[in-house]
Every structure is written in C-alpha cells, then in structure tokens.
Length: 57
Image (cartoon, rainbow, N blue to C red; front, side, top):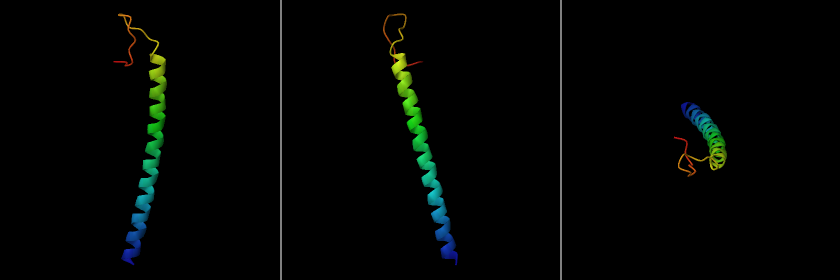
C-alpha cells in the first residue's frame, strides 16, 4: 500500500513540476518578445553624441 501511495505522490509531483516548467517557458517567451519589441523601438533613439544606444541604463 505504501508503494502505491509513493508512486501516486511521485506522479502528482512530476505532473505539477511539468506544469510549472511549461508555465515558466511561456513567461520566458513573453518576456523575450517584449524585450525584442523594446530593442526594436529603442533603435531609433539617439544619445547626445549622435550615436544610437541599444540599452536603457
């Protein structure tokens, strides 16, 4: 009986981890797309020296 409970617990743990990892991949893809859009929009900005900068700091 304990072995069956352990197997069920491991199955639920792996399903939960798989869902969390899948969700993190989706979040990472959204952040990457937002970074690309910001990178593209910042290409037109000019600094005081006349050179464009690709970073915001």
